[in-house]
Length: 263
Length: 99
Image (cartoon, rainbow over all chains, first blue to last red; front, side, top):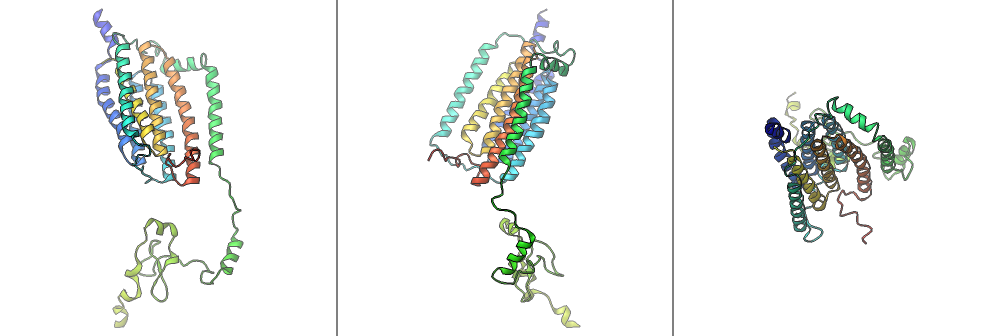
């Protein structure tokens, strides 16, 4: 009888192993989220913590929540985060200067205090309590059990949540919508503008990048008839990213013309 | 191992998330820390559900997930809007009301 009570209160040995491997890892990953400089690395560590939590849910008799956690959090939410990170700039690293003086020490002291409070509270509140376990309520299956509650006791909150979802979707669409201040110029207007601007040099369009016969790529400026590089032939964003190759190697002075002279 | 260990882990993760919200300056990282706090709360809901042998905790955790998903959608839209007008995702730059 005592053995049985112990078995109910204690979780199975494989679960303990799982916990003691994954829990420290997830705490380390969560701490790393605070400490790493780049937002992308934070996102990856966050995804790890979320997957670890999903495994904990499944281990605790909540397979439905575990799967939802993987699908919703590591799938949709983290993908959204990464998407926004790409939009905002992947290398937008944090400035590590303190804007409010003494914020960090206060935050750390506060966190140690809060964490200590929680842990001591838990230690006193749960001593000697035996876990009942969800095996009995999961007898018909976890999904069925949750559905029974969701569509009886919680049917009204469930409907309200659907309204919330629609509101959030509409709200984000309104927020992300962006009005053009001017109307988009038509092809005709662009053409007229090209011809009426200062010089006629670019009237037929900008020169294409690449160098004929020796090198043909978008990251190399074209050579003008006088042998110099045509700066206008390179895409402005390539130039801004510093991905443009130097075309001096292909300029007229360095081209090996001996082959032509032999003939 | 006692099931209460999950509660300790939940408290730790919540605290770490709270520190992140206070300390980090990048709006997206702050947002991820808020998600971490929500997840930590969910873990304690699931654990309490197991301790009490009652599925109500799991249903509440499910609702938390839905609300968190809504929050992420709207929050990220706000971040994108702020980024569009200020070219920065730092929460210190959005201080127009202070001046």
